[in-house]
Amino acid sequence: MLQNMSGQTFEDFSKGQGMQLALWLQQRLRTRAVKQAWGLAPAQKGWFLLGLGKEGSPLMGVHTVQYVAGDLEDQSVLGVSHGLRQSGASRGAFQGRHRVNMGLPMAQVVSGVLTVPLACGASACEAEVQLEAARALGLEPQEVSFDWQAGPLSDGVVAQLQWVACAQSAIGQFNQCVRRAGWQLASVEPEWQAAHRAASCLSGGLSVLLTRPAQDWQFDLALLASAQANAAATVNPSGFDAALREALQTSAGPRLVAAGLALKAWT
Image: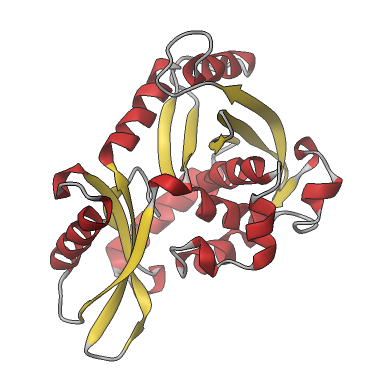
């Protein structure tokens, strides 16, 4: 969800028609070509940048873990853009070649479930979600970035729309920071969704967070599809299990989020 907070719908692939199948196949071909990916997760007084690379199919290994102190707006050597620029240079990439997925802090995200008549079309559903998100954020509808998908429950009369949203200005701030670094912003999503993705694919389970440094973590891409399906059923962190919520409160939490953001490149 929240791929650049564009307001796109993300329905179950199996319900799609021929065009959706073609798009899905194109996406599979693109993700197979991905050799490395980056996630940037919010942390105390800064951000954690984590890079993943292919170690051997289907395992992914961590090649970079870096704490970047400072603010997104700061354009000096103390800012996040400078830290990203240095990391990109150390990996020998050309200007603009690195793409990063960024996490939204929980404090900046609102989410919910909206009930609408089953007969509502996609455009009507999107308009309802936009209005609901704007009310929750106390903003004008055009100032909101949001994403939504149809929920699994329906009684034949009404449908449930699961949605997440943030202020559009937050996405603009992310974009500016990343562009100053010479990187590209690939996607943005709530940090709890990224954490769920990483935890679902982490070899050895969450206990690894306490027994191994982040540089030794490995992630199994074979588990990614089921992780995405399970995460799609929940738009609120309260729906995740206690072990994951507890893990997010540890010092390894931001690194786990960053790993989940990087893993998004293979979804």
